[in-house]
Every structure is written in structure tokens, then in C-alpha cells.
Length: 440
Image (cartoon, rainbow, N blue to C red; front, side):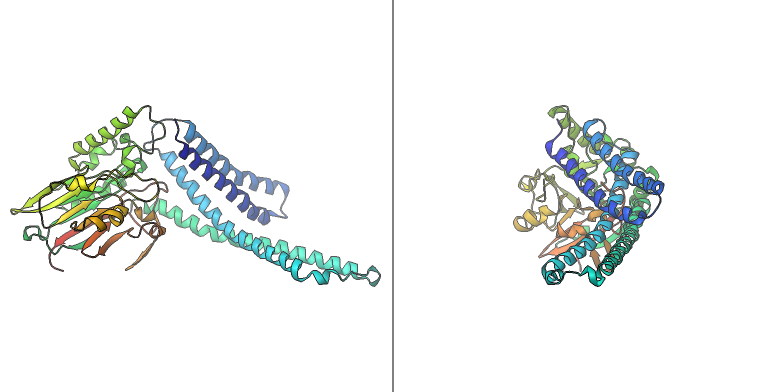
């Protein structure tokens, strides 16, 4: 059965889209005012075709069952709608401003110009024609102003249209290597200089360009990392999304091992129509097997120790735990650290950075570094030098990069893939390379 919240989500989006369409249509009407009837009809047909496609897309998504895997049309239609409606929303902002200004003038006349309305015009004085003439001028000014506002709004809306479209074409697979010196005061000398590489949020179900993805994998391989962490969300919804990509991701290897965890998308919780609970459980078991087949060591609320030159550090991996929205709380750090030997450094893989904020930093201060992902940096923002901004920061205090909190650290990876909007603007896909060192 289709989950009620997904129906509500789809209906909410459709309702929002209809409001945006109706309101932004006023700008098109103002722009073509005075044009021929054929021109106005052509604009109307073109404009309203998109909302109809949106409606069909969402309704078919609710009714038609099937694979949720890689689907070029599905992915880029969704991206197209996203870009179009963001641009329309910009137009609406201009129209709202104009309407509020007009409303203010009306209210001003009602409450502050009522005395003037009492001065009755005397037709015998010939003032009626003059009054009508003034009204005609005022109406023309309104039309001219509306056309100006509409034109300005449409021109400004071209900016997000261009930027977001470029983010799809150029940003989605523009992988960047970020290099971090990770200072650990208690690091055993045997681990000095160890190269640790982190990737996160692959989301294979969103990929459409195999060559571009493989170029990113080649970049990972060229780093020759000693140790690799993958911090969750290898699929969008179902394990079968991974199968077409499993062979190339299995090329990611490291002498000290590749260690992985689940993210919130890996459990199949976002699939609305599992045929049975057994089918859902098999999907997750198949994903665990896929990790194993790739040579990745999946950690599910468990730990291990790495030994180098007769010295040890601890690696802990937990299942997803998030305290924002409807995210799962499957992670059990108490279970994961039970019987963990007394080691000088403990590294934690936990997909959602809110786990660090709510649990790790308060109750497990012996964990030195938490490696997370999940936020994608919203796939949109600005990063110039040390300055960075993204809407993600209003939800997650730790949303991208390295943070120091007391004697603990958390690194939030910006993600290797993408979800929803099939692109990135400003916040580019990331491969993080850490060099472990004791000396700051």
C-alpha cells in the first residue's frame, strides 16, 4: 500500500505548483497584453503545458509501480521541473511586491483620502471629463507598471534558470579532491602519515553518466590511500540500483581496508510499495552482500581495531541515526563500542551529523573523530576561501567540512553523488583525503 505521507507530499507539491503557476501566469499575461489573440493563445498553451506534465508525472509516480533505479527521463524531468519552478518562484516574488505596494495604496486611499471623496464633482463646472481623463491616465500607468514588473521579474528569473541548468550540465560530476591534515594528539607513531580517504552519499540510483562516474573512481584510485571510509547512502531506495555500478565501485581498494556503513536511503524505507516485509528485508540483505562482493567491510553497530607496527586504533561504524525530520534511529553506539579495547584513537563512521550533535559529543567524548555525510551541502551554496554558505546550515550546524568541538572533531563530506536535483551549484561532489598526524 502506498504510504500516506508520500501521497500527502506529492499532493502538497502539486498544490504548491498550482499556486506558483497561477500567480506567475500574471506576469505572462501582462507581457502579452496588447498582442494578437493568436500570440496570447500560443503563450498560454506553452505555459500551461509544463503544469500538466508535472501533474501527470507525479500521479503516474504514485500509481505506476516498478523499479526505482536509474532512469534518465525520470531524473532529468525532475531536474527540469525543479529548475522551472524555482525560476517561476522568483517571478512571483516580484509580483507579490507589486501587489503589496498596490494594496498599500488602496488602503491609504480608503483610510486617509476619504475626506477628499466627499468633495463631489460638479458636472456643471466641466470637471467630470477631467476626472475621467485622470482615471484613464492612472489606468495606463498601472498597465505600464505591471508590464515593467513582469518583464523585470522574468528577466531576473533567468538567473536561477541559467545557474541551475549549468549546475546540471557542469556540476553533477565535477569531482573535487579536498586535502585535510587531521591532527590527533594521541595518534600512535606507527599511524603517522597514514592517508585516509572518505567518500559518502554515492546515490547510484541518480547516476546517468558512466564515464563521468568512472573518472571520479579513477581519481580515488590515484590517491593510493591506505584506508578508505564510505559513510552511507550508496543507493536512493533499492539495492538493484547498485548492480549496474557494482563492478566499477569494487575497484576502490586500500591496503588497510575499505570500511562502510548504511545511510538513511539504504534501508528501503522510502519505497512505498514493498510486496511484503520479507521482500524489504531481502533487499537490505542483498545490499549487505553487495558491500561484501565489492570487498567493503560493512559495519553495523560494531567495531574493530587496526594494527600497524604493533600499535592499534579503533574503527567504529554505526547504522543511521538522525534527529532531523523522519530519519531513522537505527544506530546504537553503546552496542557498537561494547568490549572495544582501550585504544588511543577512536574513529567513528556515522552517516548523519546530527548524531554527533545529539549523542556523540555529549555521551562519548572518547571518540576522537566522527566521519559523516548526509547533507550534500544542499548541493547548492557558495564557497570562496574560508567563507561558505548553504541553506543546509539552517538545518545542520555541522554541514560541510571539518569542525572542532572541544577535544573532538567531526568531518562532514559533501557527497560523491546527488539526489533530487541532478546537479550541483557551488557545493561540488567531494573526495576527501586526510593525512593523519600527531603534530599540529
